[in-house]
Image 1 (cartoon, helix red, strand yellow):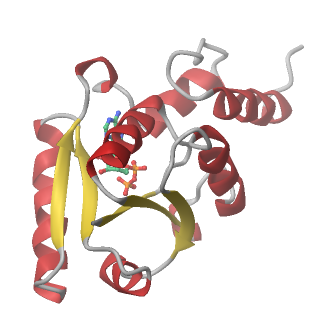
Image 2 (tube, helix red, strand yellow; image 1 turned 180 degrees about the vertical axis):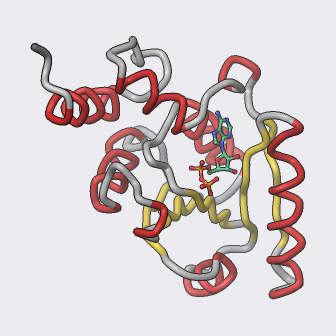
Length: 163
Ligand code: ADP
């Protein structure tokens, strides 16, 4: 079975990585689908986010990284995915994720959404938290893959050069 893992990944965190790694051993293939919607005002362009994910998952077999815009169900159909994969960190994720899963099922009833619970050590991680810590010069090495840490440091050093 091929899983489609859609998200903003702005940027990829160790929480996303944990999910991708575990999905890679559960499913025959994992397509990481990066949302390119500019209305979300991402800090990294979609090409950069794709490059970060490709570099960070190069050691895994069966991972494909693509960009998409529009409906996730259409993306799943185009890329012949059998299921949508999403992660759950806490109860606060649940309500929103359940609503999306029901919406997607109402659009395509053959497409199931599968949730993986985050590993406890990554449950506090989100792309927003990582950006916030990086913006103020905090240590992010334990939160994101190496390539992402480098890109974040470069980004915030050029936005707020050290005096
Ligand atoms: P979106 O904007 O679609 O929520 P994200 O990149 O924030 O995109 O998240 C994509 C998916 O990864 C979501 O299902 C989210 O719950 C999951 N996710 C985000 N952070 C973590 C984490 N720390 N551990 C496990 N799953 C996570």
